[in-house]
Image (cartoon, rainbow, N blue to C red; front, side, top):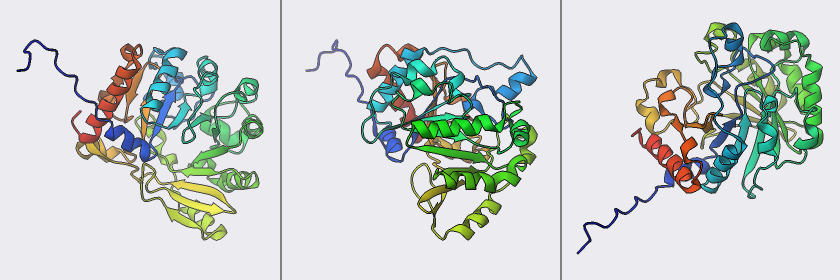
Length: 341
């Protein structure tokens, strides 16, 4: 006979949803915070208040910082051990954050199937090259949405010159084996897109051309968005090697290969991975991405969707126990994919 006073057995954690997400190449994206030295008009700042809005209205401020370097490293270790393998570091501009160096210098050595990627605007790479070269980062993605001082100022509202960005790319190429570019297609850079492509191909760097995904933050200039039709047509004059991804969180991504270099086109309506909660989500009509990244903000929030603040889980109190932390995140993803949150 079972002892009525015996403690209840702890429910077994179901890791299936998290492991499936990892197997589909889902990302773990960690933001070092909203600070940035430029202010691109379309910035969504990983769901926090972006620099353009703060500059226009000082009353609109992002969340306070709640994580220290140890907290980031605990999250990274726990979630990688739980199965997530593709880790991306974002901002704002990550290299403006005092958190970047202590975190990136202490990253655990990745397993063979894991990777660390830094997403940057390139302007601070030379300043930090000495310590960046000693990290376990294996890839850098540089946002190159401009190719002249004029377009850089129009898009990012900065007096920084394009030479600083291009120099950062060259420094990154000296340090890292893998450097990639991403370019948001817009009226302000439409005349420079082919130059950006030529720049990438000459240096054998992959590049992604991305259609604008609308958010509440960038709706005021939504008319600047342009479709990818022109670049797709041009790429087809350069290569017949084209396919569309049909599985995983990148489904719908159009991939071209030119002399072995991968050129991606990301259409705004590709619908990367709509699952579970997405099916009944009240903001589904506004969402074109689905669940392709698990995002961690600098205040210790974890959420699977930028459009749903109500799905954000604060994990700061769990950082002292890595087992509880990874179990809680696994449970959160399970509830999201099953539509029970």
